[in-house]
Every structure is written in C-alpha cells, then in structure tokens.
Length: 277
Image (cartoon, rainbow, N blue to C red; front, side):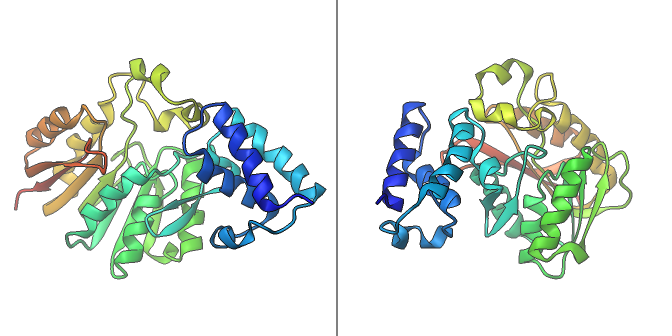
C-alpha cells in the first residue's frame, strides 16, 4: 500500500521536472492538502497509508501547479508574518520579503495607520494584531481585493479596528495618519515579460502601472503633505533599482530622515521617511 511518503516523492519528482524551486517543501504541502494532513503533522504522517481517493484529489490539484499556478492559490492561503491569510487570484500573493516592511513599522510608535493598496490586507492586519490600541484604514481600487481583505480581518480578529475603503490612492481619503504604508505596483511594463510564470496568475494591476513602475510613488508622494501628520512615518516597498527615485520624490514632498532598507537577500526593499515636525 502506498504511503504519504510515496505521494510526496511522486509530487517532488513532478515539480522538479518542470523546474520549480523548493520542490521538496512544496511537495509536502501539496500532498498534505490532497490527503487533508495539517501542516504541523506532516513529519509524523509520512508512513500513513493513502488510498485511491487521496490520489484522485492530488490529480485535481497537481496539474495546476505544474502549469505554474501559484501554490498559495491551490492551498487557498499564504502564511505571512505571524498569521495565515486567505488568498486568491483577486489579490497579490503576500511574500516573505514584505515582512521587512512590517518589522520596520513595528520598530516605531503609531496610533492610526493607512495601508494604500491593501490587497489581501496582510500588512495592515499584521500591524493591528501587534498594536491592539491602533486603528487602521485599508484602501484598494479593487472591490474584490477589499472583500478579501475584510474577510482576513474578520478571520484574524481585527475587523473592529480596521475600515476598508475603495480609493485610487488618496482620492477618497480624508484626515491624517501617523503611519502610512504601501506595497504598490512597481514593476515596469518592460520588465513584465521577465517575471516568473506564477505572476501571470496574479492581478496585473497589483504588479505594474503599465509604465515606468514609479507612478504609484508619485501619487503617494503627492498626497503625503496632506495626510501624513507631523512626525509621522511613511514606508513603501520598492523594486531593487528604485530607491533613489522614490527617495527623491519623498524629499520633494518635504520629508526627512529618508532611508533605504534591504531585505534578507541584501536587495533594496523598503524606503522609509518621516514628515517634519
């Protein structure tokens, strides 16, 4: 009789054949999803038997991954920072490198946070969980994204402290915030064809501005003097070549203490700045 270990081995081989990195890890997660094994029980379930029904479920899942559909779409979730977020094709898949932005934000104090282009809500929700006294506003231009973010806020337990608003950057926003965060679309049009195949399954408007990749930062910088309170901070995720351009925009908006922060691979990942007092 086949075991869970046998299934993992089969999946791993198939993933390697199409060149998917991290095949061993993904194979365990895909097989666990097919069999219904919780992630924290994978290691102790390796010798458990699997039956024809389990293989049939695997047959419904695996072909999509071999076509490079993101693993999170197949599993229905992505683990980010300290929580599990529901994700789908309607939102950008939260990535580990974005956790750097959350960590930097938590290194300072804030009472009211605005998340521009919230997507799944991963950033603002992670911040609200860590700061029980803080209130948040999450915006997105996509109604589908806002619906998914609201679901995550309810699931994780911060829906009473987070409002959701459809807005084209600052267009529908009133009032000030002492922390503004954003992971905007920053991939230029000419870079789109160079991306990994998985990104073809994610919302294009969350990836690119169909231009030079900087239009979102221009909109954000333009709105900061009105919406970032004196002494307040702004943190934005950037592409690895955009630190100088974004820093110059923030300087032009009257911000100070402008800094660039690398991710764990040493690439420029976040630009931070503070509004003068």
